[in-house]
Length: 202
Image (cartoon, rainbow, N blue to C red; front, side, top):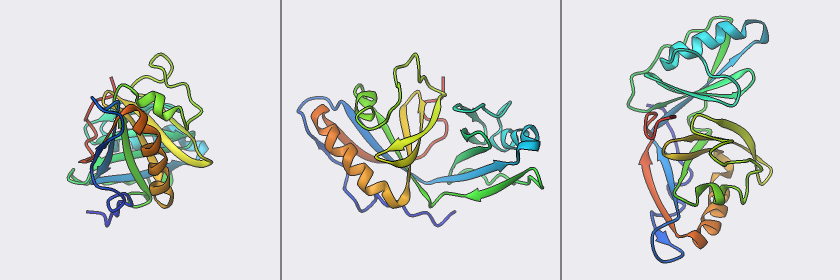
């Protein structure tokens, strides 16, 4: 298992706070995941996409701004020439062999994952992200690279809600902003292990 450190583990304990009544927002800090970046050269993008799809166990690599669920993990197209492969830490390791078609980089300790769910999840995120998060514009299976207080982050949507991949060095401060704004809607916080199939992409 990767030597992964979650910067938010010591930040706060699971809590329920803010407005009384049912929580409008749940912030779930996702643990126990492996994140691999697959970068391709423009000339052999198709070949690299096939290798990424095979690693994730899905039929085809997703296009820009999309995610695909496979037997081997969750595959995100985060940039025109880059995919991210997310797997649970307890999943069997998938050999990644791309030769000259692509380059692999382990980002497991470089990102912190925070799932934002609940009836006010999109409203909360739109306090910070310049994206149209309405279901018709950003439905499950969509992904985006965007800015959160001038910090580059990655966001995708599944049936369980939205997931933010935060740069590890800024995770605690960005989490504080989410927490403070979520209190007005009623906030629940928890830690859960990452599951690539939780919620699904449909």
